[in-house]
Image (tube, rainbow, N blue to C red; front, side, top):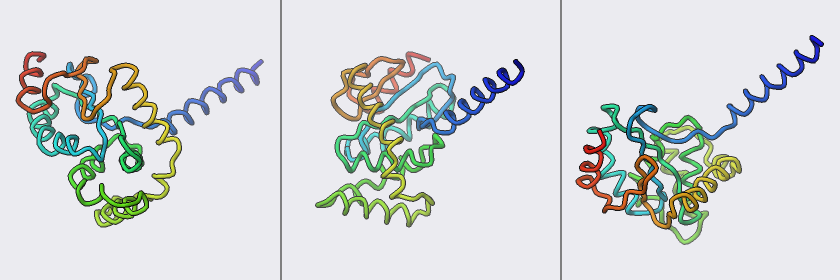
Length: 193
């Protein structure tokens, strides 16, 4: 009987530890228990998404995320193969941090163009190697588990929110239907605090 209980314990213990190690962590910033939960669906080749990261996000971070009012989760909604590969790279360290994601949006014009996907991948590798992110780009791009995670997020977005464009912002499980600029977002968030 003791051996059976020990065997069941070992199975449960090792199963949960393996699953927790292989789970793909979301990329997010802010207080996990914040009253306001934002999800932004974006494609790394979308210029409007880059505008959000470079123009709206810094103000959002300063006024709401850093003060603990908002948690934001960055979810991939790739519109093409280049965006899918870049998303896999952003998730590759699986640490939930957004530094690579922000870097890719900030430098989008340097890598998100080319006549072939191989050319784009080479540009990605070059700019990321220059920044010394210390990730294996080829390993990231070929990671099926990360790819499945990204595509599952995309499918869920279509099913749950009827999403068909990027960037799309979800606030506490409701689609933000106003023009996505900081003025409109700030007014909405201030009413929710």
